[in-house]
Length: 339
Image (cartoon, rainbow, N blue to C red; front, side, top):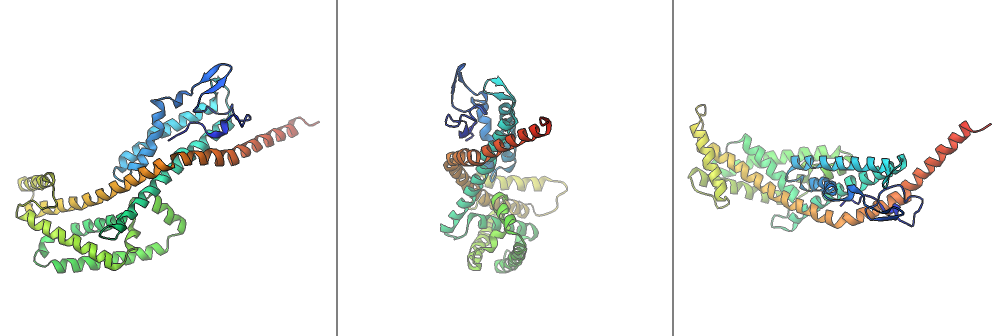
């Protein structure tokens, strides 16, 4: 997505044509200049942070790691533009500053924001599904369910599913109420930042109507009890793949063969894979949001470049740097060259 050099290097702006290396060939008395940092495979490093931002929902650690090559590339590009005027050595702080601002906006801030907006927008797809809940709300409810399963044994309610759900609903209602209170004290800026960049959105559970949440969580709990019943009878649940059912049997064997384990291997193995199944539902939603991030990023690549080149750099950065440069020269003259 990265364009190494913005529009302000165009022939229509002769005052700045020598400041940065353009991604297109520049005609000069020495022939055509090809920026080495704009050639593959080096140029491919400039895309890694955008890929990292897009996959952060499904692979946060890898997403963060992919920022490293991009940041190294940006640093090398900024330093190169500061040091060289095309293929000649001519250090220029002004040229380096403009490239740094361009990379910060067109390669880091705006593309990342576009990805996040795409992910959050894709979450709205859930509203047209059968549950009428955003994907983010579904995720948060699954997270809550996983935490609840950790603290409460399903087998104790095997013959009283309604009691299990009653206690679950009470705990969830308290969670929603506390989240509402906490959300009231957050300022708007923090809310926007959290909405854009935090993968977990606890406040997503306060948006839907209680009826929709009740319908979704009750169906989920019913499914959990059905899965548990099949597993304790050593039968594959309809919702499980062969691989997941095999995972259940492996966990069960590990519990049974452990010398320091004294619990019920079948029940505990069932509990483990049920939590895994809940996480799988979260992962499916994250895949959809990741796809949304890639789609919006693809649509916004060129508009972001043009906006930064034609508006930010050309209208604000270039005039400001020129003014500062002239101001510094005049101050130097007044200070050192007056009689």
